[in-house]
Length: 164
Length: 294
Image (cartoon, rainbow over all chains, first blue to last red; front, top):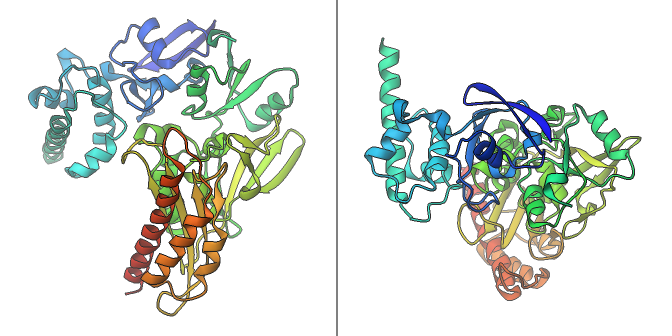
């Protein structure tokens, strides 16, 4: 057991665990942040996606011992029911969720992608950005539409802000 | 060895890391992006006593031009490579290869040093490094040696790297104005796939129409390690690379590769696809070259 310190969703946390435990298990079991899911455990499906220093990664392939000092954002950090993010609102309004297992990972990946855009992305750009997230209900059409909608809202809001 | 018994050490700098590597009696393994190493730990294949976590060694994460060569730090991620202006203009084939690695998450996590060190016969950046004439700088606590990438691999997962050594620098020759490269990959799907066959090509073009002064071709996933297709390469200089010539070169590739049958594809399919990928690659490369010229 080793103490490991990092920042999760803006607040500093410390956990005691064995250093080869995956970061995903630490988040779910030690910190009770259960939005990130385990599915393939090999970095192929993206269900465990989180942001580390604003870049999307798979938390199932990071060891707790590597997480020391990391700045982590999980799906809970993107937004909760009380303060939903534009992406989450768009997922709801477009109905871009079926069983919901892949949804937290997709929301995190979409957030990371939307942070980088300056224009409304094309469908192929969205597909490339979300290529690492699998939805086994195959509800991709709605997911892509939700990201488009979120992008529109985000850019509109940005426009409003700059007018002020 | 249980996963819960494996320790993780994070050295603060390269010297500390090399000192830890030189300690005998402990079974250790380097851990960078983890996209391969952690999967193998979960599968029970790799259970070292200690992981040496080098991911935090930012001194080994750089892309710079020095003395006419491009130096890439082994902890440079695939995303860093894709974003690099320098590599986009002077090592286009490496950027194309990095784009084909996994998807966004894997590109953000995986490092080029890890891709080399893992020594997968299907590694995507390795054929690109072959055609760019990469040289690896390998260091241990008290020694430093340079190894051309073609001499680095011994077999699947096997390299000349000793237990106390690590890759500390990757040196490639920048492309001149008349050089052009392409990377082609066949996977089961577009994103997030392991190569069934891949090929990297770098050509030095002459002044006449489609005249080629030489070049390098490297195939992945068709042999125990990445291989150069030297017979195909020797054909590049014979005559202008017309569509007929491309046809002939890709026929030679069919004979030159030595694939095996495994879970991803059969040997005969790989052979056909190696030929087809080179055909497609050279065709696209010529089109691209002509559009640059006009």
